Image (tube, rainbow, N blue to C red; front, side):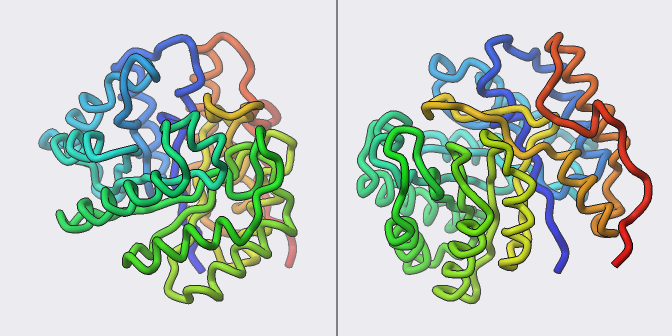
Length: 304
């Protein structure tokens, strides 16, 4: 099974930052990540600029990378949308793959979208089907799938119920997001196994946060369950601004370092990822949550 890296640092990584990053700096970081070989790169989200000022230039960022000679040959450019208006903006500026989702937590859903889970599910399915009809790739997610900072435990049946509606609508590319970072490995493996049992054709991704230090362990659990697509953020930046305790994403260079210690995805340029993380730390004037960019990598694989 080939592991796929979906870099979300320029979206989920930056949305919590109070210091707005200039467009030219985002372009440079995106170019570095593309050169490092990431399979998918989430350039931003199509949300109201007053609510998330960091994402105000998302349209311009996509427009830049859709200019002649700038379009990456091997990297899929993804964008997050919340509704039909965001979808129309993304279609206008050249998004390759649309990501959209529903929270399994009623509290988080209302804070994030102003809608109940049922209302949000109907809207996202309709938006996803519209995106599909244009020939675009679509990935739908369930946020707060492993727990909620406000509500605590989220029943697995509720998560699977949302996924059942996705699958019934012909949406087989799905992601489970640990928005609050509550997941433990046993839970991750069990829930993804249930998804694959429900729909053997499902293309599963995981979006894990490291709020309580279990990010990489949860990635291993997802791998055990047959998950192939991993969403992570360079430097370990990020967190949802609408959850109670925001923790950073699984760190991209830490995850790639782990993979390469096991002789997987050795084509990814770890040194370049580390250089980008160090550049981001310098830009923000502080240490980031990632570990490998500070400690340096180990350049030998573990014995099997």
